[in-house]
Image 1 (cartoon, helix red, strand yellow):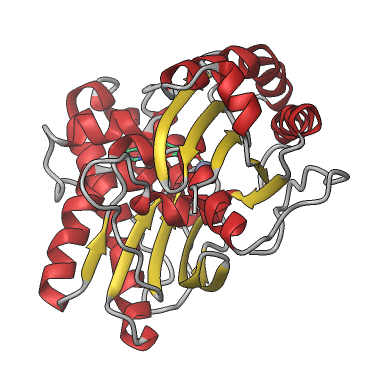
Image 2 (tube, rainbow, N blue to C red):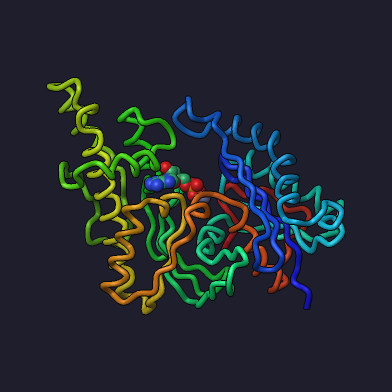
Length: 345
Ligand code: KG4
Ligand code: ZN
């Protein structure tokens, strides 16, 4: 059987991305991050959808060019158009959805709506064509940590997901971003904290570790205790942040990683599974990756980490989720709407 040719679109937040896949093999993935939000300290939804609108066609044409196929060949052969149905910002989702619908109408290729979170959960299994494709042995437990979501789920099939634990307030990425903003490190702050943490003492400061021993996560207490510590120290030393930024970042990172891995360890005790995957923007964090590797080794788990470039939002992960839906014959009606709270898994 000839493997299907799939074009995938991701536009749920502030990254415009298009990927081309032949079956599970990724032929190309192009991503254009939006810098327009930096000066606002967070994503501005209206600016995000306008930027998607400007970028989607150029990003798609570069993705087609880099796939090694001609535009005519792609239009001729296309078997499906996968797109992020949700969760995400409604205006941003609409741009990807409309582009996907247009392409589907023009080529006759059916639509496949993908849950953005299913995409993150499959990111460790993206195959760029070297060697054999990484095998996916279900079930596995996934720790999904991004700017908008923090959860641990049991994945028993490409779209069979049971959420076992989730945040009751902020996401892990949000905790990094908000604390980083307080230190004047810009947005998104997670990657900057990661870099600065390398030169700091992770035990220099101790912050709240809320809901210890419970199943769900909470990050708002950590954020408040970080804020109070910085505010109190600044009152007596106006150069406190400048002098201790590395220690602050290292201590913040240690605390977030401890919170995440402690919950993962707790959930894994009852999950009856020995395979663990990480996904989402925060799974790029060097402290989390190293900590997860140590824990996996200690517990005898098999650990799947996504390539760094597939940790944050990208269309390759939507493509692989779309491929599995294609195999199962799960297509989406052309009347599909953007679903800001996300479709069911
Ligand atoms: O998955 P993603 O691109 O978007 C959402 O679906 O939310 O995740 C973005 C989040 C941001 O909060 C960003 O600060 C965080 O991932 N992030 C990191 C790192 N790289 C990205 N957080 C900590 N350390 C990193 N290296
Ligand atoms: Zn995401």
